[in-house]
Amino acid sequence: MPTRLWLSAATIALAIVALPGGAVAAKSMAIEKFAFDPPTLTASIGERVSFVNRDELPHSVVGIRDGTEIFRSNEQMDQDEAYSIVMDRAGEIVIRCGLHGSMSARIVVKP
Image (cartoon, rainbow, N blue to C red; front, top):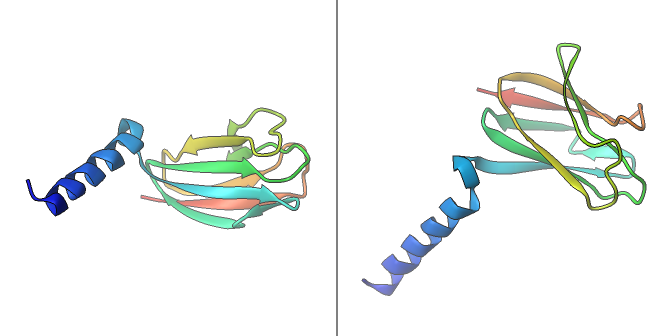
């Protein structure tokens, strides 16, 4: 097998192993300086969105769709702690910090 073909096959195999359960590539929203960054994120159904606390103080992540809470991280995500969720249906999700009510963002989930 030529070297280039072998390297291509190895790269594809690693990509498949790196995405368990057939999940699509992940997106990320940082929590830093008492804000979610980016403030608006677009994702697709089946895509994993990760939240990482970059602040020294704890935060939490609460997802609200149509006025109903649909997910919540543990109450205190410490610095560098992460929480992730797979987007399961199209629509807009409001993101809030359960500890600091002035912090908010949104995720727009596309079909």
